[in-house]
Image (cartoon, rainbow, N blue to C red):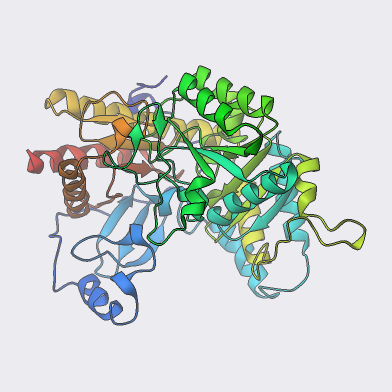
Amino acid sequence: VEDRAVAACPTSMTQDRKTAHPGTRIHTYPDESSRSAQFYRRANNSIPDGVSRSMALIHPHPIYVASGNGAWVEDVDGHHYLDANNNFTSIILGHADPVVNAAVTERLGKGTAFAMGTEAEIELAELLVERVPSIERIRFCNSGTEAVMGAIKAARAFTGRPMIAKVEGAYHGTYDHAETSLGSSPGTWGNDDAPVSVAYAAGTPRSVTEEVAVLPFNNAAASRSILDRCGDQLAAVLIDTLPSRVGLPDVDVEFLETVFTTARSLGALVIMDEVISLRLGLGGNQGRLGLQPDLTSLGKIIGGGFPVGATGGRADIMDVFASIDGQRAAVPTAGTFSANPVTMVAGFACMNQLTEASFARLEEIGNGIRHGCREVFADHAHDWQITGKGSLFRLHPHRRSIHSYREARLTDGETRVMAELQRRLLERSVYFSNYGLGCMNLATTDADITHFVEAVADSLKTLD
C-alpha cells in the first residue's frame, strides 16, 4: 500500500547488516576552509569542474567522500550523510557490503583483467537470463550508456533501418542519439503533440536529431501518429517506463500498449531501458508491468558497485553480436574491460542476495519516505509533491500534475530552490541530488527514514 506508515514497516528480511546511526549535527555548507573546498581548488588544476561527472558538481564546491558503510557515507571532513543518492541508484545492498567485498577480495588475488572469458561472466549471465523473462541472451559492457548504445545498434542491424524513437526528456546515457531532447525547453521543444528533436550536447550533427523521433510520455494518440510517420524507417522505440528526468510519473497503460503494438505493427523493435528500474523487482519493471520488450539495457545494480552495463534480449536479435561460421559479427563489440572478472563476481554476489523479500523491503522504505514527506508537505502547507515507486522517489517544488517531461521540467526559479534544498540537506546530514531524485538502499533503517523526513521538514523551513 503506497501510503503505509513507517511504523508499519517490518524489520528487513533481506539485510541483516544494519549500520548504527553515526550521529548527526548541523554543519555549515559551503565551508571554504573545509578539505572538500581545498580538494576542489586543487582538482580544478587538472580536472574541468573539479570532478569527472557533471552530476557530482555542487556549487560552490562538491563534497569529496572518504568512505561509505551501509546507508551512510563520510566525507573527507568527517561529516556523515545518509546517502539518499546511492551513486545515482547503483548501490542497492548498501555501501561496503561484506558479501560483495569478500567476493571481490578473493578475485583480486587471482587477477583482474584478461583477454579471455571467465566463468564469472557465465554465472552472472545465467542469473540475469533466469530472472528477466524477455532476456534469452546477454552481453556485458562497462556502462548503461554503452548498454543503450549496443541495443540501438543491434536494432538497426537486425531491422536494417536507421531511425529510433524515444521519450522527450528521458535520460538514456550519453550516446548522441539517446540524448536527443533530454534537455529541451519551451523555446525549443515545439508542440505538445509533436515534440521537436533537440540536440543535447553542443556540436551534435544535425543528422543525429534527424534520425530520432521524440514521443510525449503518456500521450498514446500523439505517439501513435509520430511512430506511424516514421513508417518503415523505424528500427526501434527506446523506452524507460519510470523515467527519472520525466519526474518518475505513473505510466499510462494505454500509452504502453500503443508504443508496443505500433512499433511491432511497423516491424520495429522495443528497447526497454532498465538500467535504473531493474531495482524495482527481480524481473525489473517489465516484470511488474507484464511487458515483453525485444531488447533490454541493464547497468548499475548488476555490477555490485563496479562499472557495468549489459544488453540482452531475444536470441535471434542478439545473434547480431555473434560471429557465425567465422564471419565478422553484424555488430562487432569489444571493450577492454567488458565482463572483467572483478565486476562479474561483484555483480553476482550482489544480485544473488536479492530476493522477493528484498524488493518488498525496498518498497516499504520508499513508501515510508513518500508517506512521511506527504505529511510534511500537508502539515506545513508546502506546495510540494513526491512521486516514485519502490525505493525510487523524486521531490518536486510545485503541485503541477505530472504526466510527462513538460510538467516535471523545473523552471529557473524551481531549479534554484532545488539547489538550495540540496545544500540545506547537506547541513542536516543527507546527501541528495540537485534536481530531486532520491534512492535508498537495503541497509536503510526505519530511523534513517525518519532522519530523512525530518531533514526535509527542517530544510523546507529555511526555504520559506
